[in-house]
Length: 526
Picture (tube, rainbow, N blue to C red):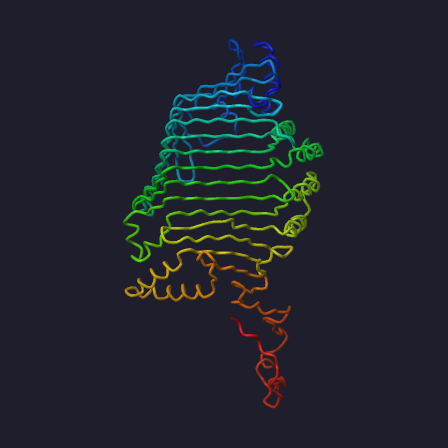
């Protein structure tokens, strides 16, 4: 339904159904209707769109399905006076399919209970201006020769909105809440004798997503182009239009952000249950831009480990286990716009390969020339006595990938409660010899630290591309020796064994040869 033309309060009749079919065929192709995959017909005061999944499987190339029982999906769509559409559906259904895979036959069953969906779709935006969905619950079970998965969820709701973006495209927001999520994964491999169950439980899962400037209409235009140019010769002939459509779809979106949030997340293992009061995973990315960023985050609060797992660790380490972790990483100075536009301009589908062989190296060098960064955003690991905070960045000061070159690294690490760590290690060293080495290392590290006014200690670490390392302004590792081309590992392949071993054949090797006592010696390495 997400591809119909404006409705403008047209009548509900066969002619209107034919127009909807024509609109959808632009994106799905006529064969979708000829083979019964999609059907449109007037039903009362709305149109009924039916997607027949069994017909879809038959229309596809031969599959390895042993059994396929998936009920049709039905949408009711009704034109509105302003050219938008009311869209609704109910989808309480069960389904089963079996397929042959590399590990044998895999069976999957699912059951969706009391599902409902309603919204208003705007063809001009190619998006739902508002959308709601709910489900009383769901179950899913999948099994193959070596593993099985059982998942279930309680009441689930979803809401979404979309508006026209100021600079083109669509701004949208979506939020979904799922109650009583649980999953059991059982590995049962008779070949290795491994049998291990894992369980995941949370009374509440919330998913939020937002996007700015999503080029939804331009993306649909690309889909329509692909359907209209399925023939390879036609695609090559119309590649100029393809390039225009690809450029129109940039930057795909201005910004996208998404978050998964679990409450009281529990992981059951053979060692016992690992718990967190809250587990949050997040992701964000700019679109295709000249100075883009990307970010990842993981936060776990109220961490606890099962008693049997704690017993496997040294007794003294229990008090050092973290109770809260927040890790944030990302990238910056990512020029994807130049890469995309130059790639679109350079490709030629009439040639093989479509892009010149040297193009990849050229575009890679230009990308690195913009100084992309790996970011370690402010992160923290803590327990009741200590808190370790860190941040930094990694830069690549060269114009092409080179495993022999090092990046520039700046890192700041700040610790509160460091003395408590040392005290714990010192106490443990009285009965555990291995802890003595840890004490020495901890004291040596403190020697390089500086004390802040609030009592915390801090290390500012700078690693340079020349191999040197500086901690709080003190060089702890000098730059690597500069090796000129040809200096290391040079041999004369034309020399005979006698020339290589007989001092008489080499004046520099004879006992009478003068020795330069002031000859430069290699610099010692720290």
